[in-house]
Length: 139
Image (cartoon, rainbow, N blue to C red; front, side, top):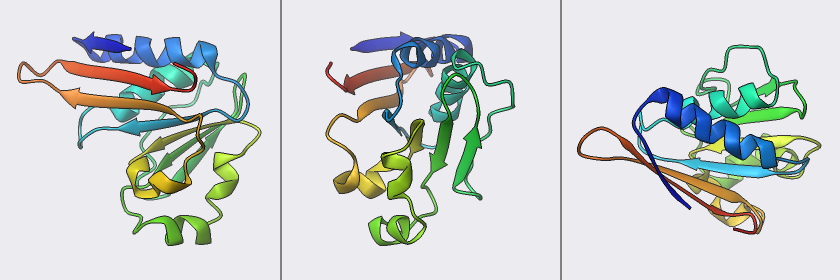
């Protein structure tokens, strides 16, 4: 499915829409360049799960854990070297968890992602709007 977002609020609304479908074990791959809106999307997703905490990109901590209707694991793999480092940090546990995993820069572990991963690709258009494509997970 393709969407056009004209604002942070619209990007968050798309995140919230996807969160309504989320279930235990869901893995969401968030892809896009720096500043594309991956964390903005995650904020809307978290809000729909009833998470009250501020959502920030976990670039330096790699993983942030939040409690809501479902537990949410927000991972940022930007600084990771690849699959070996992900495995050594116990990353596979987040791919098969009792909650939902939102993974920024998931292309670094592409071969490890479950077959039913939902992929959210965010592209910055020339007019600075965001083109958002959501695929996978039975779509």
